[in-house]
Amino acid sequence: MALNSPTHFGQEIRNLHATHWHTYPKCPQQNSYAERFNRTLQEEYIDYQESKLKDPEIFNIGLMKHLLWHNTKQPHFGINLQTPVNYIMNNGYPLENCNMYLTNTGY
Image (tube, rainbow, N blue to C red; front, side, top):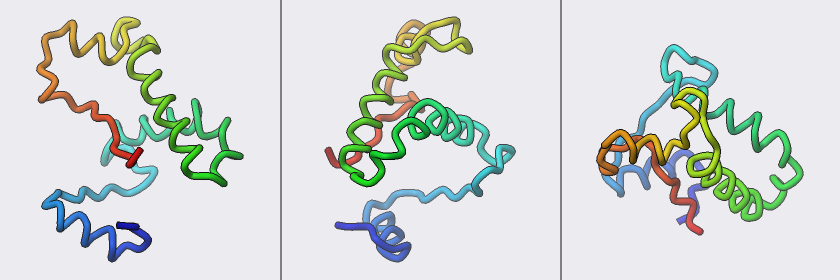
């Protein structure tokens, strides 16, 4: 189903029995993790790939490759130069309790 309007999106959320969380953009006191993640994506990927936005399929494939690299290959200073996946595995976090999800983009 193409989610081409707020009405369609809201209906699909209800069909999935999912919770729709609302946060205001550029409001880090509300959800600092999401704001930092969005800034990181903007600075590391989107700023360099704007020309690919004309073809969302190409852009999204590249974005998924970047996210996989970011979470499985890129060392992060905040977790002692480990990748997020290694940090989760090395610290005994069960994957079902993990807050790091792969996004279902339909590909």
